[in-house]
Image (cartoon, rainbow, N blue to C red):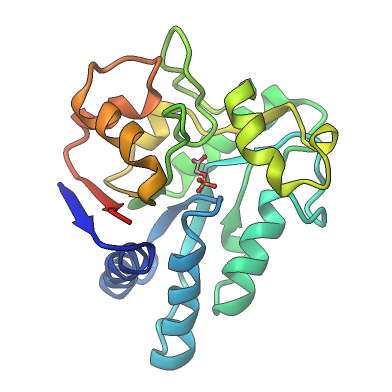
Length: 234
Ligand code: PGA
């Protein structure tokens, strides 16, 4: 289902309604979470709903899509830091129930297997939030010759490095590798909510209406049975 909304604020409102309803309906939900500029408005609204309306996250579990390799949790560009500062520090979630791949693990293969096992142990993902990259990536599943199923280490593409290095002090500080959840765990989520600001309009259209191909990783979402896309027009 595709919902066109007028603005980034409306996109954030609509997504917050969906996630709040999920948490109310199933207080111990497993939420798949995402980082980036796109979900910041949504996370702000969830924090407000907690503060003003008592939205209860005490039993919620979360798994994030990805994490940069080699950045410790305290690094302000790590996704753990992002999640803590944008959301977890502002709601009553038990941080021991919040999971991201450990990008500093020396044995990244073992870390990836453990991450997949963790998601399985949690019973899979009830609702997965996604953004989308300009190149069609979801998580850090970059355009490739095949859909990578499992959590894996990925070398980030030029497009992603250009897009994300703006958030680092300089481009040389940006890690070239990341650990990302694979396509399988994303597609096994019982429900998926993809949010996109207006600058992503073209790639969203290509992903949802074009050929299903690993060159546009988000195109696989076309076959998900419960997909909601919220796209801002302006
Ligand atoms: P953005 O990133 O929200 O910062 O645009 C989205 C993504 O790359 O998945």
